[in-house]
Length: 119
Image 1 (cartoon, rainbow, N blue to C red):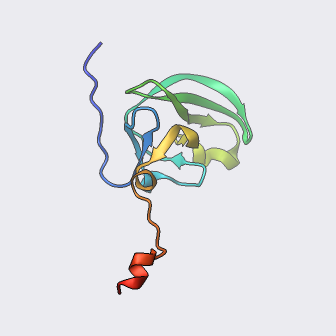
Image 2 (cartoon, rainbow, N blue to C red; image 1 turned 180 degrees about the vertical axis):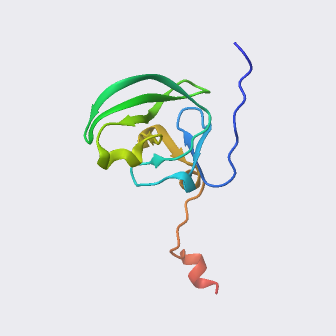
């Protein structure tokens, strides 16, 4: 087995919940369900036909290349014309990732009692 080289992303990124490897930039997310255009530090499983809520699709499971955890899937081919926008895109399962911004910062904009007393 060779040496593992990970890509570090600049900016707000989503990370693997298990090993914290960078996976995707928040700017590459296309929808609330985490449909993503570009990903790094992943490996792909074998292609398989899978029936999903939106119909039959050819997909590949995606895994973290650092720790091997299952993260979601990649749409390889979609069979319905209304779903063509998904081809080549990735879906991350939300509970398997962390958003570095919300994990690192807890921004509470309400003033504390000490703030109100000292202008």
